[in-house]
Structure formats: structure tokens, C-alpha cells
Amino acid sequence: STFDRRLRAGRAMSFSNKQRELQGKMEEMVQTLDARTIMPKRKSAFLEMAKCCDLSDPQAYQQCVARAQQPEQRASQAVQQEMGEFQNRLQRAIQNCQDEVKDGGYRDQNRAQNVFSACVEKVFDKHIGMVGDVKKRLEKALK
Image 1 (cartoon, one colour):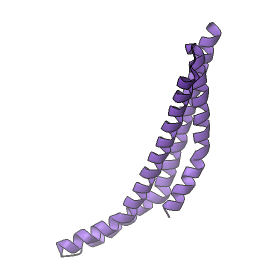
Image 2 (tube, rainbow, N blue to C red):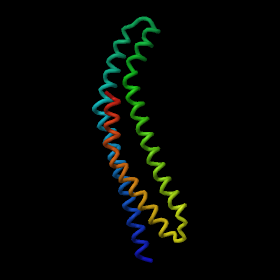
Image 3 (tube, rainbow, N blue to C red):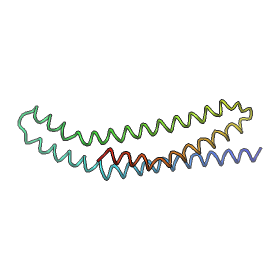
Image 4 (tube, rainbow, N blue to C red):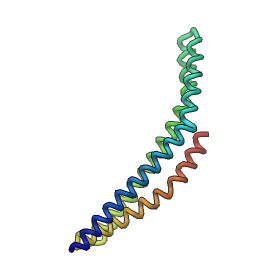
């Protein structure tokens, strides 16, 4: 029916709005962490690497550069790991929605789509709410 098509279109729009909202919050969090913690570590690494250039022994120079880069590398790895885990959790939750619809045995495709869309919308709401916790864990890891 026309109502079902409008409902599906509205859910799809809401779904993509939630996806954009989550993406925006995650990007904002990463930019904030980058500005507050990673960039200062990067600056410190460059300043330390500049001092390494005063060393005459090539092996000592390489070791000095490697040591100087470690804090920034650890910070970047922590962010990548946390973001990867978050993405995996999101994907698993969406997969659960797909499984629920599949297991529901819906004969009506519109009904199945509505159930899936409602489930995914809840998933995005939950994950939007988790951004603050992710940020706290990262801030702790980046100290």
C-alpha cells in the first residue's frame, strides 16, 4: 500500500540519518582526540627526531628515531584498534537484525523490511550512545 511505501521510505531516511549522525559523532571524536593528544605526540616525535640528526653513528640514529616515534605510533594503534572494535560491534549488531528478520519467517517483504529497519535504527541509537564511552577509553589509553 501507499502507507507501507511511505513508512519504508521514512524508515530508510531515518536509518540513513542515524547512520550520518553516528558517523559525524565518531569523526568529531577522532578530530578532538587527534588535536588534543595525537598531534602533540607527533610534534614531540618530530622535535626528538631532529635531535637524533646530531648523532654520528647510523645505528644510534636509527634507534633514536625509532624511540622518538613510539608514543605517536602507540596512540595511533590504540585509536585504530578501538575504532575497529567499535565497527565490528556495529556490524555484528546489524547482522543480528538480519538474522532476526530471517528467523522471523516473514512472508510479507514490507513487514520484513520494516522489522529490519526498526532494529537497525535501534542499533544506531545504541551505538550513538556508546561514543562517549569509546572516547573515555581512548582518552585513558592515550595518556
